[in-house]
Image (cartoon, rainbow, N blue to C red; front, side, top):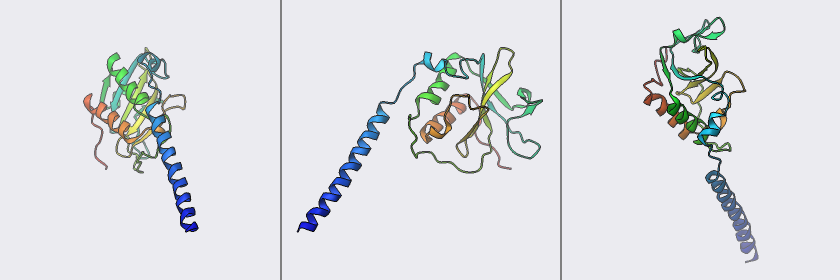
Length: 182
């Protein structure tokens, strides 16, 4: 009888710790910071961009890898298949998806595959319409590539539901998000 009580006590202690852990986790997820529009507009690179574009491209580099088209070390806007300039409201919606739809701690809710055939990007341009930073996106395998670490965006903490919101945003703007695999 004493062994059964000891086993029940150990089980209840484990179960109680698990319940507390998930209750704490749920509470943290409910209380993550939601950034205001004004705060999101101050995040780099949105704070420096004169123009934010969404892009769809079907380009391969000299090694036959899919990538943004470049010419003389700069993104070649002329070689992009579809380019959509965002207005202020659309840009604010994009920052809401990038910064407010994700949890502030890493959860294992991200599914990644190994294809990395990027076809989309978010481009940040200056007053002369020169792209100074970008986020390259593969909607097939849920992976991103930032032009620099300075770009404020954490692709490792971007869960599937946020990825679906971003893909829907691109589609709502009239950009394809998938294409041929050849």
